[in-house]
Picture 1 (cartoon, rainbow, N blue to C red):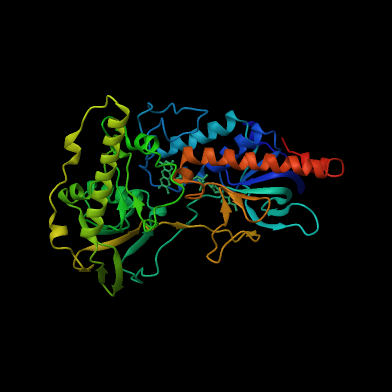
Picture 2: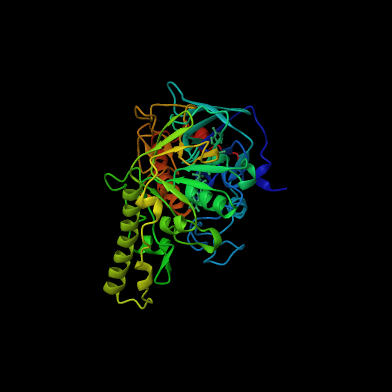
Amino acid sequence: MKKYYKVEQMKKEFIDTLVIGAGQAGIAASEHLRHHSIPHLVLERDRIAERWRTGRWDSLVANGPAWHDRFPGLAFDTVGPDGFVAKDDVADYFEKYAQKIEAPIRTGVEVKRAVRNEGRQGFTVETSQGTIEANRLIVATGPFQTPVIPAIAPENDRLMQIHSADYKNPNQLPEGAVLVVGAGSSGVQIAEELLSAGKKVYLSVGPHDRPPRSYRNRDFCWWLGVLGLWDMPAAEPGKEHVTIAVSGAHGGYTIDFRQLAAKGMNLVGVTKSFEGEKVHFHADLVTNINNGDANYLALLDAADEYVERNGLDLPEEPEARHILPDPECMKNPILALDMQEAGITSIIWATGYAVDYRWLEVDAFDEKGRPVHQRGVSIEPDVYFLGLPWLSRRGSSFIWGVWHDAKHVADQIAIRRKYEFYETSTQNKELATSSSF
Ligand SMILES: Cc1cc2nc3c(=O)[nH]c(=O)nc-3n(C[C@H](O)[C@H](O)[C@H](O)COP(=O)(O)OP(=O)(O)OC[C@H]3O[C@@H](n4cnc5c(N)ncnc54)[C@H](O)[C@@H]3O)c2cc1C
């Protein structure tokens, strides 16, 4: 029996730092807290890395190669470094990682409510298994918590409609054509899988970046790293809603919408509205595809410049610059479609996620409910966030990025604790150091 699963149940307990969520963010937090000898406990309502196990479709593999999409302390053993790890193997990896660092994780415990104590330090946290008092909270409940389906979704009993979070495989869908709304990494991969399974697919393509899977013998993850693009502190102005279309499927390939169209995918612009059986699309398909191409070519340019500047011996790849001619769906974009006539029987909404912090009753959010923080350090003292997109940089919501953010957050907690110990050296020492591991 694994040690960290067998934690004695208590009705009320004290802990210095309570981490909520045991995905990659919570595990990274635990590792760095341990390095600082900060007593902590990680609560997870399901299993470790549950979202990698059950919150993704069956065939999903990591979008980045195994050498890149991992924590520094452990390599994947299911594929070679340049391979793309299957989602269940990613979940197993995090289980193994948690074991390796002896993370004090308690699974099957949901945090229902957390409130700041009045007149004394810390928080009272109500969980599905009793109350815990904690001096501080690290909220690691994920960047992608609640699937979002836009309000335009039609009320139409004829159609099966699911969010990409609930998509598993093509067999789940009824006979007939499918409209996939959203062409980020999820939408485009799902659409491609459905097309390969013999379905007629309409893919609604919005603004996107589409880096080359690899160029001059280096994966795009490497290029983003050496070009400093993972470290961008915020999305470029005007590109806040631009998604990234990449795939590690079939050994990894560049997402090329023109190629998908050549294979038979029906591309349409952003989905605008529904009226009975009629669906309307914005006239932005050509712009979106051309902008995606420009983004692709800009990365090749930046890569070439980098090679030149540093005198690297990487093979030239002029064929990567070949852009296929406009497919029919770009020459004559579909702006409206009768779904019944087109045989559409299902819609997959690959339209992203929102966060849900209703359980966290502290003053740490803006008017839209988004955490206000600096590199994860909240405006509400002793509350920290991890794993959010752009928490400190572009890489923050990804596997390797959250590990570095977690280090920063743990460092900040260690600094703060030093002050606390100075101020409260004798009276509160017991409370401040109590631990369950
Ligand atoms: C389809 C898809 C593919 C992705 N592919 C990649 C990839 O290839 N490479 C990469 O680096 N990143 C990828 N990501 C991004 C990111 O790595 C994942 O979203 C990852 O799951 C985020 O980890 P996390 O620990 O921050 O959050 P999560 O994995 O969401 O973990 C949060 C945990 O908190 C728990 N929790 C939530 N609320 C409570 C509560 N109240 N009490 C107790 N527990 C709670 C949840 O059960 C969950 O287990 C992908 C994301 C998606 C959606």
